[in-house]
Image (cartoon, rainbow, N blue to C red):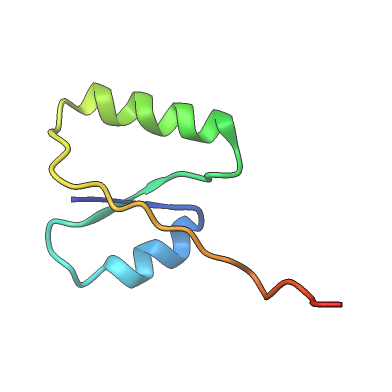
Amino acid sequence: MIVPARDMDRAQQALENIPGVRPASLDLMDPASIDAFAERFLASGQPLHILINNAGIIGEPSHP
C-alpha cells in the first residue's frame, strides 16, 4: 500500500512498523509534485483499490 506524504521523514517514521505500507512523496500544493506522483503510480502498474480524499480547514473564519 502506498501512503502519499508531503514530509517523507515523518511518514517513514509513522509507517515503519506497518508491513506492506510505504510512503511516496506528494505535495498537494505543488502541481508538479502531483503530476510526478501520478506518473510514478501509473508506471508502477499497481491497481488502485481505494482512494481517500481528505480536506481540512485551518482555523475558523472570524465573524464581525
